[in-house]
Amino acid sequence: MLGGSLVALVTPMQETGEIDREHLEKLVDFHLENGTDGIVVAGTTGESATLDMQEHCEVIQCVVDYVKRRIPVIAGTGANSTTEAIELTTCAQKAGADACLLVTPYYNKPTQEGLYRHHRKIAETVAIPQLLYNVPGRTACDMLPETVARLSAIENIIGIKEATGDLGRARRIAKICPPEFKLFSGDDATGMAFMLQGGHGVISVTNNVAPKLMHALCVAAINGQRAVAEQINARLDPLHQALFVESNPIPVKWALHRLGMMTTGTRLPLTVLEEKNRDILIKAMVHAGVLEA
Image (cartoon, rainbow, N blue to C red; front, side, top):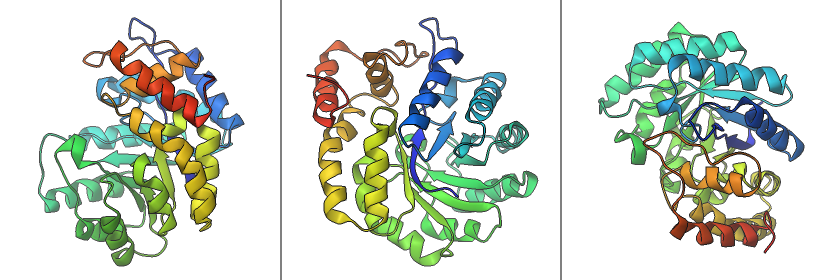
């Protein structure tokens, strides 16, 4: 039952770069208490690119064990190697994740046929439900709607996180895929409009900082309550923008640190948010009501 406000969860780290399990559990509690509908762990926002295989599996297992089936857990298991993606997806299945999120292979620049075969191979090898993830701004690889439609015919490929911010493309995918195929926005700035036109939810960076508001926004937008959704989104829009003032997840990790939820720890090549950008983020947090002026 995937839908609504899903958080693209950060991976808390110590200042030394080691994974901070204590604060990871604290963040899970925060989302359980504030209405988040599902957790995406070890995705882009979770710094999956700098987690080794063992760490990646351990973070997934930690969240699955701590959530205890209270809400769905979706594990990020994409890779630019099909073999590695299969290994990570198998790990997530063994851990008890509800589904996996598989980003298009980055850097390799596969053809559309290569994308189809990559995702088909993973789906045929590991039976767990799988969401495609298209974010060409980060991967230099764009999965076209026609390829999504081909993959939607595979039983355990159940949806897509579409992060282009192109609402016309989202409508095209909805038109040519089965009605039960799940459509998630991966772009907070256009997420409200995406849901108002029939999307099933948002896999959100903003949700890390403002889970209660994001849940309310998703409920309103999915139910077609445009005026309510627009009112909530007006509070969130500066935050949608400020959380990308530097590369994700640099700003959101600093925002959570500012809220007392974790340290500022990131892993190189990412760094702590530059001081010149902190006021922008603080003003957006105050506007959203998640931080006092």
